[in-house]
Length: 120
Length: 187
Image 1 (cartoon, rainbow over the protein chains, first blue to last red):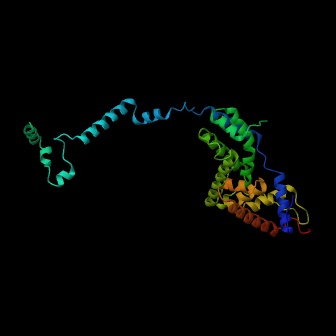
Image 2: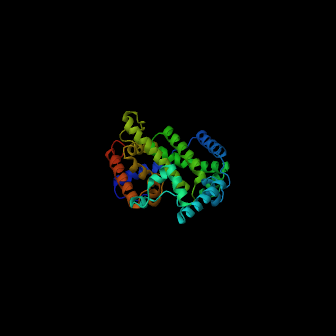
Image 3: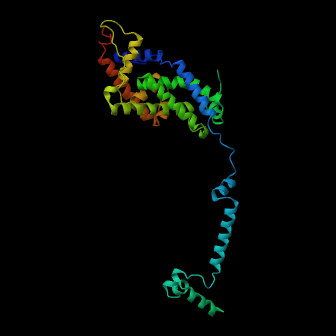
């Protein structure tokens, strides 16, 4: 159907109609190769295994149950030390800054043991 | 042959069904090959582009997200991008190496045959910028609505309309400039 306004539009439409009426045909042998390629590509593709539950994937990403158990123990110990730090624990940066602790005690093993003696 | 939608076939391909891949190939390959020939003006290059585009489809199949795009739209876009890459490489490599598009005008005074009209149109299409050519081919030769042209080209409908209009205008001017040579002088 022509929806043209000028002779030039008619000329253009003539060419379009001719091109639409004779679309480039695919070669049959080429099409056969494409279908063979398609089947081979799909058949030889590695099959994805069944998808594991989210928790299982998280555990695997963290290194398995043993690693997660060790991580949990570390977290608990860290919390405990944070809430109730041992007297011999290295001082905080704040304590050092304000002169409330002496780093030498923690760097010199001998001095450290002396300190333990004093604590009785 | 097969009433299944392309999405349904693609879901079967994703689960490893080779017969679905075969059915999709038979349904889509002739269309994208014709599209590639019209963009490239060269059957051998169009076969390469068709093969590459389908291979990309099989490789993305396991991760295919239904509803994100129609299989046909996706395949047209990938094919067109492969063709445009080839056109740009061709232009940057050596214009002289570009495939010659047969364009034999009839003797003056004789009307053109359909084959000659197609050749003249292909020759004119080859002179358009790649995106204009793609828009005109999708709209006027593949007979797609402007919305689908826009989706395939990944642009808005207005941008698609503009490309189609500019391409059409340029083609009309080129063909009109050869009116006498093309045997239309007696109209």
